[in-house]
Amino acid sequence: MASDVEVLLQMYREQHDQARQLESQRASLSNLVIVVASAALGFTAQRGLAMTMLIVTLPLVGLGIYGVLACLKYHERSVLHHRAARQFSRRIEEHLPTLVISDDWAELHAQQQLRFPKIFRVRLYALWITLHVGVAASGAALSVVIFTHEL
Image 1 (tube, rainbow, N blue to C red):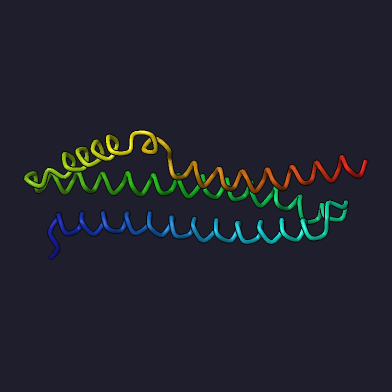
Image 2 (spheres, rainbow, N blue to C red):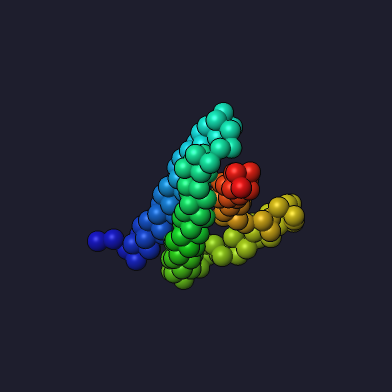
C-alpha cells in the first residue's frame, strides 16, 4: 500500500503535469494565431487595402480577442494547478519536515528577484496577451484604414 507521502507526491506531479500541458496548449494556440495573422497580413499587403479585404482584416480582430481570452483562461487554470501543487508540497513537508521545501523555494524566489529585478515583475502571461492584443489591434487598424479610405 502506498504511503501518504507517495500519494501526495503523485498528486503533486499530476498538478505540475497539468500546468505543463496547459502551457503547451497555449503555445500551440499562440503559434497558430501568429501563423494565421502573418498570412492574413501578408495577403492584405499583397492585395492592398480595398473594401474586399475587410473579409481578412475583421476576422483578425476576432482572432486576437480569442487569443487574449484563451491566454487568460490558460493562465487561470495554470494558477490553479500551481497552487494545488504548492498545497501538496506543504503537505509533503508536514510529513517530512527536514526537507524544508518552502524555505528553499522562498530563497530561490528571492535570489531570482535580486538577479533580475526589472524583468522579474513582468508576468509571462501578460506578454502572451500583448501579442494577441497586437493581432486584434492590427486587424482593427487595417479595417479602420480601409473604411476611411473608401469613404
